[in-house]
Length: 169
Image (cartoon, rainbow, N blue to C red; front, side, top):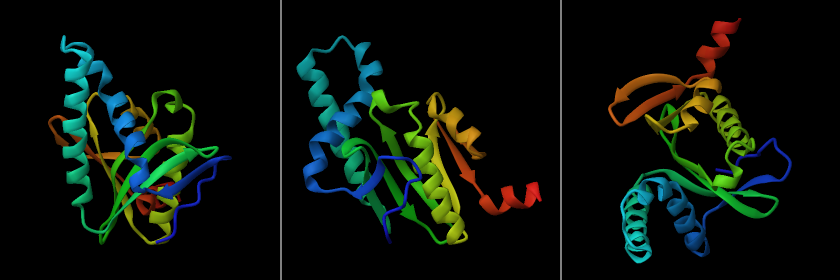
């Protein structure tokens, strides 16, 4: 499958490579900073924990069949990642995350819009799991995702372009 075209100046996707591992570890660590502040652990303990959790997460994500793994770049600089699984009736966003300084910049919306365009072209829905207290949940709701199932810690959301289009006609 071709890399999605992003309708935002300077924002691109490229396939993940082994050379991206240091960036991905850093990205993962930034997502865990707030909770780690409350632990009282040393810097070394935090680094070991982040490494262990990152490795486990990567193993789980790379076990998804029919998945694609991309680095999101802004003006040639890594800004995040998006992992997608191609299901029969949907594209599952396994994970999307941005470095903190790019959150709220419009990159996430542009990338998700590109996923919507790909899904629409292939007659599929888009699905995502989001932690209940993740601030990105507001973005997903604004973009048209609807709650399918409350799974406790996670909410399972879905975007159905065909249903949205039918409702507005």
